[in-house]
Length: 114
Image (cartoon, rainbow, N blue to C red; front, side):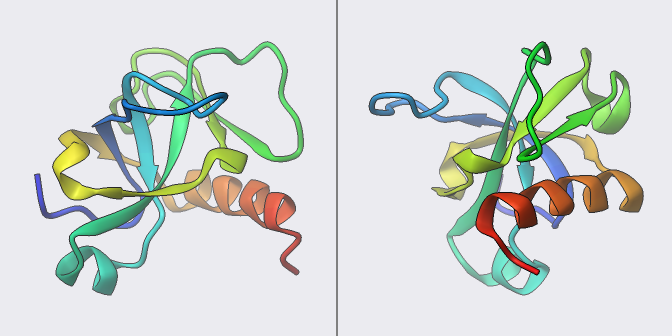
């Protein structure tokens, strides 16, 4: 899968990883801008987890059904990373502008951006 857009939720193979990096094949949110997504072989993504018990200001909960998600999921913005597009398996859906804005607010908190 080479064509992705900002706000897409995509299944990605994140292994191999080290230490506490989120692992396994799981949904991720594409955060890189569409110019990068069109021309680069990398995409900047935020992993999602189905563990929504503990939520901090650096997390954004995405409801079940949003962007093709089967369960409520948490965007773990402190795990933002660039991945080779060959790790991206298939597109599940796309976040709405409001859902994407919720993720962006959590990311701003993580990176101390104003």
